[in-house]
Length: 346
Image 1 (cartoon, helix red, strand yellow):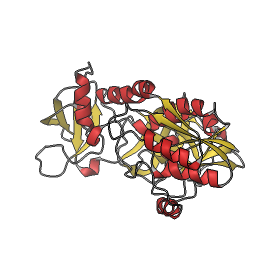
Image 2 (cartoon, helix red, strand yellow):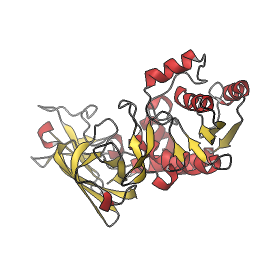
Image 3 (tube, helix red, strand yellow):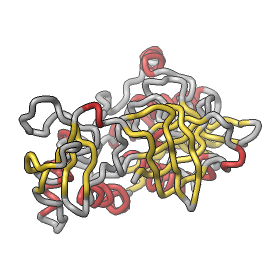
């Protein structure tokens, strides 16, 4: 099989490239430059040396300008609207399985990446996205906004692998990734300080909401002033800077009133939520009765009743949950880990 493999410089994509080549496939490496190269941080020279060594052609796609338009700018604007965006999900939809996939198809008919997920044939759904077997690294949640027609042109060599096994495999083959330290932070934000990053955007015209009242739920009275709704997220406890007789949590952000609503932990749980920008991966008529939902990455899917209406997901949890953050992804699963739909919480 002729396969284009996305290679970032990290261990996961390096494993995907080497593993597929070892299996006898004809592979082409494709690196996406999403950020301007800076001294000492550009993986391309090391990738070029690696690909020369193993006899694999390497192509580099400069996607810095579309990455700014489709990922960085929406991230900034969402915060200005007091939402909590998910840049990785936006990047997967617009960049990795958008523009980069288009580029990959000029070299091969199949695209492979180092995501922990799988595309599997389901007897009812057809080829469908499924959670990776490594529950600690599964990235199906971040792929829930990608049209399934695009994912059906992809393979995921890491589907059944776990991270320690991948590191061991690379060590056994005497290979080290060009970027050995893999960040868990947002790639375009230095030091993971997105507040400082957003402040810098103000000089370019980004309008961030200013201070406003903090409303105590239940008693319906103002108890403090917040620093700007963009600096908070639903469910947050730390960093509120409000002296009170008991710990307070962010319950919601009232954007029109520029008001932060807080309350004690017992007022935190919610029973329902909804999401727009619907991405149907499986037609609802084919969904099983038992459904599960994830509304944040670090969460196991929870039972819920889900309906689709006018291009929206409407979800009612079987038991109360922490309040979802508008701007994050909602992903609907069946009991076997297949992804049925995704959307953006609002």
